[in-house]
Length: 306
Ligand code: AMP
Image 1 (cartoon, rainbow, N blue to C red):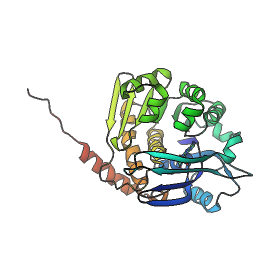
Image 2 (cartoon, rainbow, N blue to C red; image 1 turned 180 degrees about the horizontal axis):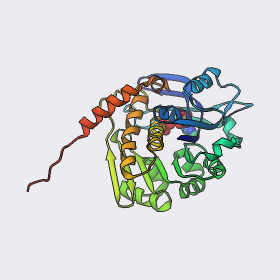
Image 3 (tube, protein in one colour; image 1 turned 90 degrees about the vertical axis):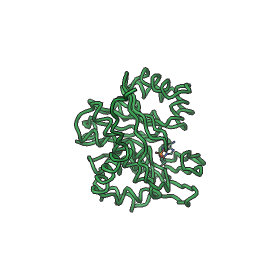
Image 4 (spheres, rainbow, N blue to C red; image 1 turned 120 degrees about the horizontal axis):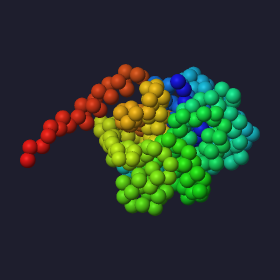
């Protein structure tokens, strides 16, 4: 099994109460692909500029990520800079420079067109549609977006939403997209617009999954000491989608487990700046955290005798 992801490959400048990093490796597609590693292989569709450090490409290759679809264009790489609130829950974008992404027209390698599981990571919705159109027979399509695109290209975002199986979106962005105030109303409105499953990410309040007549909530992995939450959403989605890909079915039970895996992979990612922690992640650490998560969240509820 394998996954295709289209999204940003970026140089991120991030500052928060724990420190600052200048032009570190980031981008939605990078976090996604690194998070997927324990479960499946991922191919990246994106563009970088001629200024992109070679060592970053080497790292992705060395990690087994397929970069045949990573174009190098004359010009500057996508750059994002942001700062965070004290509790790291809210990212404020200081600057977004699309650079080479501004006129990127991807032409997928022939083998990529046959990959049925696709993640449209946070990037220009027109580009997401362009990639989706080139896939011969899409089976499981995930989608993420953010305020930048909802603000600037709402109609395109809604167009993508019609064609995906599952959406991953922040609670605030879900409210902005649907013009609703309550989580449940947001979820209902999103499900009406296309996807069968809505995953609403709620920062340190965890994550909620919705399908028609079904819902599930998972808290965050409590013992994490967050240092930089950049890429939390992308690494959640990477773990989630890759776990589903590996499992080979999209049943509700699989999606619930995938939400826990996504939570755990994101909990590792946020322990250090940039991709440092994902880069060192070991299978045993995931297994241990899975067990701990199970113990922390097991209520053992028996019927209430009232
Ligand atoms: P997250 O913290 O999961 O929302 O993702 C943060 C990552 O998204 C950073 O690595 C940024 O480079 C990337 N990013 C930020 N803004 C955009 C944007 N407008 N389009 C695509 N990627 C972005």
